[in-house]
Amino acid sequence: MPTYVLEGGKSITLPAKPVTVRLHSQGDGVRLQALVDGSPIQAITPMPGHLVVPRIDAPTVVRVSPSTGQRFGGGAVLNLMVGHDARAELDPDRGVLNNLDVSGLTQRDILLLEPEGAGDQAQIKVTVLGPAAAEAPLPPGAAVARDAARELLGTDHIVGARAMNAVVAIDASASMLSAMADGTVAAAAEIAAGVHRVIGKPGDSLRACLVTTRARWLPATAPESLATAVTEQTADLERVTGFRSAAALQSPGGGEDTITWLITDGVPADADALAGREDVHLIMVVPNSARDAISAQGLPATVIGLPEAAGSRPSFAGDSVVVRDIVASMLQPLRARLVG
Image (cartoon, rainbow, N blue to C red; front, side, top):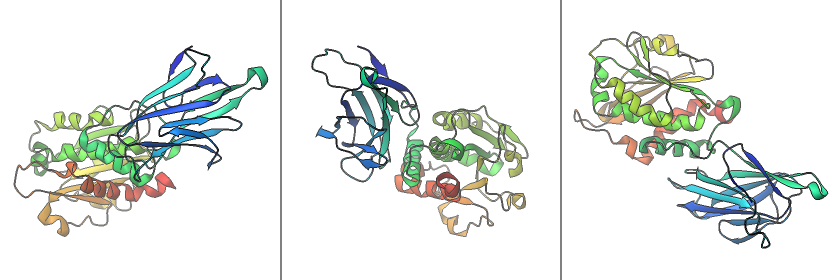
């Protein structure tokens, strides 16, 4: 009998027999539940990570949650098998789903089981819920930011019309050169990429640009590659004075569903043009001693404090508490759109 390799949105059919789900977690222990219309139904759980649903008479969701603690920790990855235990069959039908990252989540609906047909034609349709399981690994700072965004929004991804395009616009004027050289800009870009992994539309919905008096657009890139692409593009920049944020607001493919994160060290000279806009958010990288004195002039802004010593490599992206605060600030103006 065949073994099917599953991914998000893919369906298989199984014989109309008791359905067995087995989960192995790389990290946290897991608890499985079967639910109909949001309420648990009777099922057999002979051991952690093992669930048997005797009958499927109505659409049934299989949900996983951590067996201990409130959330899955960082690096929590699940491998799943769904099928049926048939002693008379040496190799029964089954589906396998590997590398499902549930880091930062309180729970995850993983399968939808639906009855189909009747009598001898009865089957069970099994559909994997959510996006493709095997997401490309993120750099460390981006992974921490993704987990924080999942925790804050209560989901591993935003779907449908609520999902967003994103632009990471980098102030490329002379005052930002040291922040580019010491890794500050790349670290901030990593955090933006991690947030985008949760709120972003599928496909090429993440763009970056370097901005002075005009924008130089980088090719569309995946979240896991954004920081590397930014580092490559900023390595040999010449000193240029002037930064006009408006140049970053004409993104290729942009629109009302686009958020622009401006990574800069001060309020742009053309800040008046941004007044009242909800689709622009400043990410201001400033010395720790200046944090309390910073004014964003009423614009949505996140302030990231930096070491005082010139050339000191920033450490904020490695501190999960700091990253969570940064992500919370970035998401706060978007929450009404993202979660309703």
